[in-house]
Amino acid sequence: MGQLTYAVVFVGAFVLFGALVLKNQRRMVSGSDFSVAGRSLSTTQVSWVIIGTLVGGVSTIGTVQSAYDHGISAWIFTLGSGISCFILGCFFATALRREQVTTVSELLGKYFGTHFQYYCSMLNSCGMFIHIIAQYLAAIAILTSVFHFPLPVSLLITVALMGFFVISGGISGAGIVGKIKFFLLYGIMIVCTVIALIKGQGLGNILSQLPKDTDFLNFFSNGFGTTTIDIVSMVTGVLSTQIYLQAIFSAKTIKEARNGAFLTAVIIPPIGILGIIVGLFLRANCPELDGQSAQALPFFFQYTLPPAIAAFCSAVLLLAVLGTGAGLVLGVTTNVYMDGIRHLFTKEPKHSLFIVRLCTLAVLILSGCIVQAGFSTTILRWSYLSMGFRGASVFVGLCIVVFTRQKKYSAMIRGILYFLPICYFILAVFL
Image (cartoon, rainbow, N blue to C red):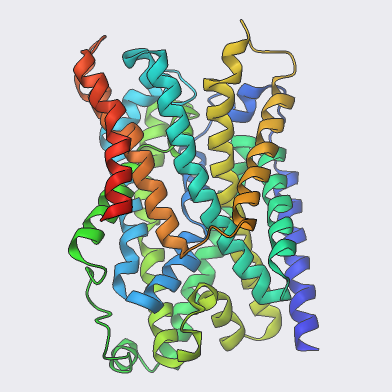
């Protein structure tokens, strides 16, 4: 009976979330509305878009998983996210919003040529594509925990739900999902942290019960080199990702863009600390999760909460994961359309919204096929690789444009920019 209650409340809560998103959707009539919402977003709406994509499976499920396995090094993702958004507000938001572009590749193409625009767009899309896979893994972990579905069924449901969020709402839909996620997800993680501290009889007692064979309080537990690369990957990756910068491009004014980035910088890092406490509590008290740590947070809900409340929390968690995935799919779709398909027409095609949505469907299906093929590992590893790849493709070129403001650059600089992603790939694979 408890499992039936859990399933019914889970489905009911998620249907409610979907209804809220649909009710508040902005009407779209073109591909531009889908991508930048008519450049009308306020400070909080800019922040909601970034949070809606950046705070998801990695910040919650992935952080708890990594804390369970490695300790406080799990804070790298959310700490790096906060630092990145602060830097975005300080140095980049003004220049980016002033350019009146839709994609970061389009911006770089103005200064380094159209060939680099296509090259950069392709690699940036590949980086976001990798991150989409991380969200699939997180969503599948939740659905498997709740319904015990086999992989193909969980994957099909994930693709369908993620498609619903991104195809129906575009950039404005990402903001609505981000707003819902902010209030619900933070409330849930605070409650979970309080429960973990009470059940664990305080943080000191939790730490004393951790296995002695791993230094869970070592921020560099994965190795100094690996941790350094992960942090740099996070900072540069966030500053190079289409969907996060798309929120800046969509802002009503430069001031709204900057303040939206600053607000996000304050909000994101604390959720990582909450996730670490929950992960360490589970490590101290639930050794049976060893080898299945991707399901640590859904397990915590079922382990500590009444079935109905646990189901609601799991539904919020799934919303967070799908919102992040939907935002990333939106970013890839925007790149494919604006930097590729759009150039086949002399002006925006009459059926641009349909074409953009068709691109979205193709991205969803292709990423789902890769997950089904079995290319999976820990959620955070996928995410760090994704961030680093995006950073290597965009970050240096973006810094050159923002800080030097020249009209043209030498062939040597362009050559370095072409070569950087190759260097990162070699470092990530062989180190």
